Length: 211
Image (cartoon, rainbow, N blue to C red; front, top):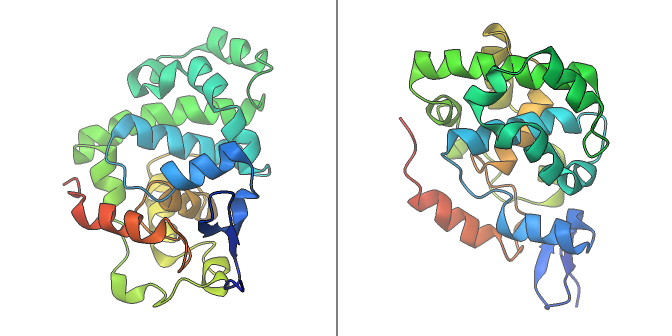
């Protein structure tokens, strides 16, 4: 069976985007999470922080450390992380279960404080992020491998990045932000022919955008 570029057949016979590499945990992430719309501020904050940690590393490295990150960062509760102090930074730097990068650890704490300000300003992090959903007319008509590889950043991710940076956030460049937008479902970048593309699109159609 010849598949379009970028698709692979899994052990269950289903076609999927190539990037999970047939690793069970990565395949579950692809099937059950990536691209599915999220409207919960805590989950969004976690995703954005982990994308920041991923910078310069593989996503699989971060995915396999995610439970350690959750324990270390108080389940990414925005108010709790915003209250972290020097002792927490040293604790995290000593935690071999996470990525021990001082600037990225400090960034999560800073971004939690900035997230509180943003929630006060706009009502919720979710509402602010979903305002940057692209017009469907600007999206590739068919999500081929070539189209997907050309989407490392978009006008919307650039705009969201600039808006966050203006408000004092860090580790939120436009490429990091686009990866976040892919993960949390503001776009559906599953390839045409992937078994998850249509179900994700249905979830997005039914999803009530936060306002």
